[in-house]
Image (cartoon, rainbow, N blue to C red; front, top):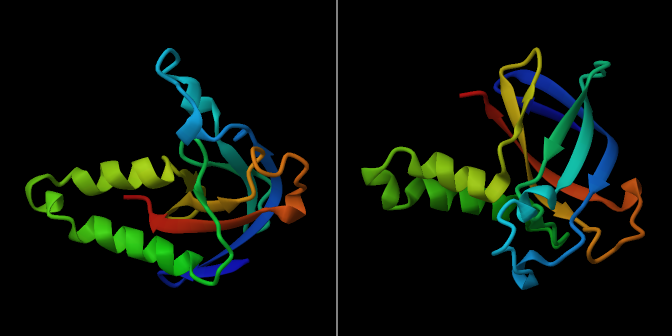
Length: 148
């Protein structure tokens, strides 16, 4: 897929997927293992602009938001970001947006040789609901931002 952002073209190709989301985190008790959710993620390995180096993009702990393939996935992500930006908490705490964004979308990864960072917003399927999924089965919504 080709993305043009702030006048710069970025071409993304999914090379591999590593999915360790083998549990439904809403039904799992991590109270005795606080690091447990950190290992439950989806990783997408992207080739960017045909460079040799592969960029590893991690979902947030317990996987990305679920990609529903209902025609509204991108708008859903835009709505979430707009809700974060307009939240009353932003008036009193400038770190609210950053913290809430990271909670929803993870830490993201730098795209070398560009001024951008990429985050995994939505993904489907997961190893939990489709353990035999192949790379061709996966669908993603990524967010590209400036590094700052």
